[in-house]
Length: 92
Image (cartoon, rainbow, N blue to C red; front, side, top):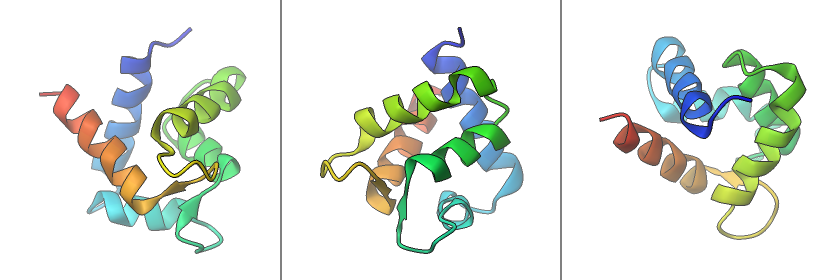
């Protein structure tokens, strides 16, 4: 199974290579434009980051569990930014 570091690195590569800013990536994956990423939207992000289909559901649940600070079951921009900042800090 892919480690957390490998998964986060793939997400960072996806965002860095395909978007001008993390905010642009957030808005791209926020398909319903509600300002929050649902589990299904996160699964699409993980698919684009080439995370194995078998573990996408589990990884999306763990990402929500780890970064959903307000407990609504979704990832808003502030929570997404926090996650991206953490990924960036870990890669230095």
